[in-house]
Length: 112
Image 1: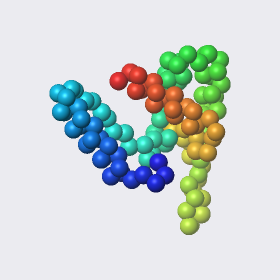
Image 2: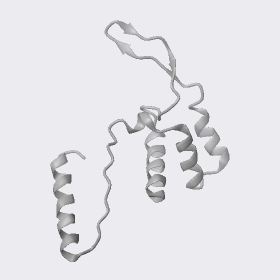
Image 3: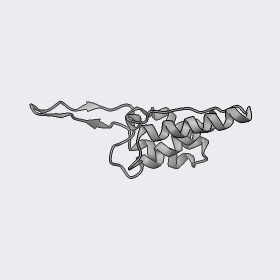
C-alpha cells in the first residue's frame, strides 16, 4: 500500500498477537509474498478457481483461450531474445489479470 512499510504490517501483527494472547485466544495468520505472483499462477489453478467461483464453463474456456499459444520475448541491451512460449502466469498489463488473480487468491484462501 502506498505510504505503508513492512514495519507497519509487522507492528499490526504484533499488536494482534498480544491482544489475542492476553485473552488466551488462538490466532492464525499467514503471510504471502506477492512480488512475482502474477508470473506464477498456473493455468490449471486459474481454471479451477473460475469453476469454483461459479463462472459458466463457456466463459472459463473463453478466458483461458487467450492464454493458449502465448509467447513473449525478453528485451536486453544486446537486443531482443528469440520468441518463446509462456506456459504459466497471468498476462502483464491485461485489464482481466487483476480480476483473475483476485479470484484465484480468494478461492485458495477459502480452501485453506
